Image (cartoon, rainbow, N blue to C red; front, side, top):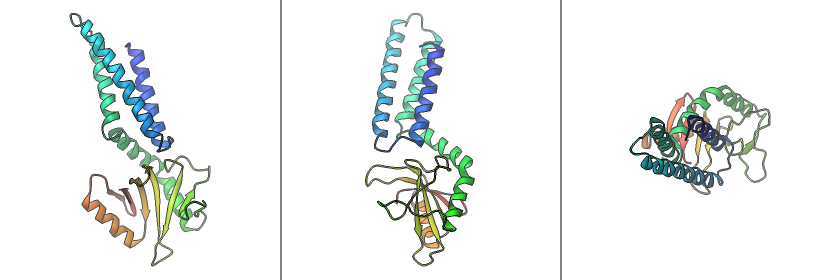
Length: 205
C-alpha cells in the first residue's frame, strides 16, 4: 500500500466517522461499523501476507501500513468508535455551543415547541439550524412539573437502539433534574459529567 493509498484510506475513514457521528441513522450504524471493521481486517491480513513474503527485505512503508491499519481497527472496534467520537464531541460542543444556547432561548420564549405527532416532547428543528442534534436534528423538551417556566432540553449525541440508552447534551434549569443528573455523575463519572452551569453530558435516561 503506497503512501497515497494510505492517505486516501485515512481520509475515507475520517469521512465515514463524521458521517456516522452526524447523519447515519442509528439502526444503520451497526452495519456500517461491521463493514468498516471487515474491510480493515482484510487490509491488515493482506499487509501481513506481504510482510511475510518480504520478510528478508522488509520496507519501512510495509511496517507503517500495518501500524496505521491496526490503529484504525482499534479506534473503530474499541467500544464502537468511542475514542474518536469523544474527540468529535468536545470539538462539536465548542463550535456549536452558541447555537445550542440560541435554541434553548427560543424554547424558553415559546418560539420552538414540540411539533411531531408521534411524541409530545420532540421538536424537529428548522432547517436554519446546522446538524446540532444527531440522528434527526430534533430535540426533546420537558417542562418542570413544579414550575412550567423551568425547562430541560435534550440534544442527542448518540441515538441508541430501541430501549437501549442514548447519550445526550442536556440543558436544564429544573432543580429536580439537576439533582438527578448530579446523582448520575456521582455514580458513573466516566460517562456522565457537568460541562458548565446548567449543561450536562449524560448517558442514559
